[in-house]
Amino acid sequence: MIVFLILTGLFFLTISCLYKYYSGCVDKNSSELIDVEIKEGTSGINIGTILKEKGLIKSEVFFKVYLKFMNVKGLNAGYYQLSKNMDVDAIIKALQEVSTYNPNEISITFQDGINMRKIATIIEKNTNNTYDDVMKTQSDQEFLKELIDKYWFITDDILDSKIYYPLEGYLYPNTYNFKNKDVTPKEIFIRLLDEMDKQLEEIKGDIENNKYSVHELLTLASVAHLEVRSKTDRPKVVSVFINRLNKKMSWGSDITTRYSVKLDDTRALTKAEYNTINDYNTRGTHLAGKMPAGPICAMTIDTIKAAVYPESTEYLFFISRIKTGETFFYKNESDFNRKKAELSNENNGY
Image 1: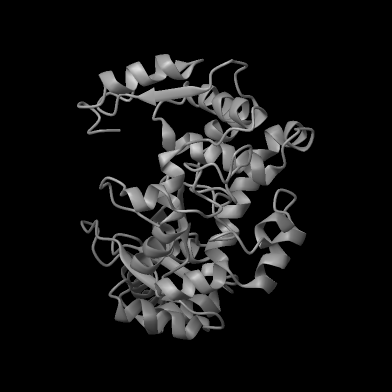
Image 2: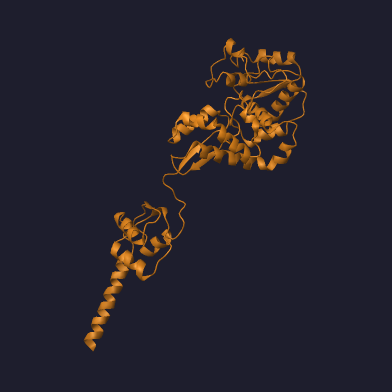
């Protein structure tokens, strides 16, 4: 009887020691995080194999027995970051939580002021899509009609054949995370449009009650955004454009000329480019009293608000000191021309 009790005691002591050893962490001093992918439908048995291959547990057999004996359920699929300093219980607890970690996740930044050509270049650089893939998607008529049905701020205005890029000005600039490099242009566009929807929600009523359409407001905002650096100056710039519209004057914006000839570098415009006649170039008289065909860049909510809530002024002209970004506003052309002459050398002729 005594021998039996001793043997039984030794048995349970051995089991206890084995349990303590195999359920313990592989390396309590390790701080390295190891990526583990558990695919959908992976069994508990196979999870043990994965963990052993990653060096996260001491025995896959023990892990499998443990799952069965403890009736462990609810191990999730996904990407996890685990460490060798975690014991079996900690690893199981981690796998029972829904993982938000994704090592393949990518982050893409779309800065304000960029146009669709730049957006396409950024997407090509950061994903598995080509520039042409992006351009094809943003002009896909069926896709555009789906967007018109989905978003209150997108209308048939974007289908105008005069517009270079239908979604220009509608994609909100920000930094976004996507699941991986296989993200499609459609998924990217919808993400940016969802953000635009969110940003516009606060002023939706004032936009809908405005004398100008959403498309026109975004057009006003986009040109003002590129014309001056200061956020506080943009409501004044918008007022200049509105005043010129009311007087049947053209906007005379070099920014629109650059866009009209698809010039992305900073070189001086040529005389021929200034004289280009199309639905974006406001330098000539052909658009007197009219806006360009559409927005010309991505812009932030502050600039959109400048278009929705412009200052009330009598200004018809403005010019900026390129070096400092300081902008000067004038009611008459003679005062404007004097300032322009004064800044000519400093502004390289502009």
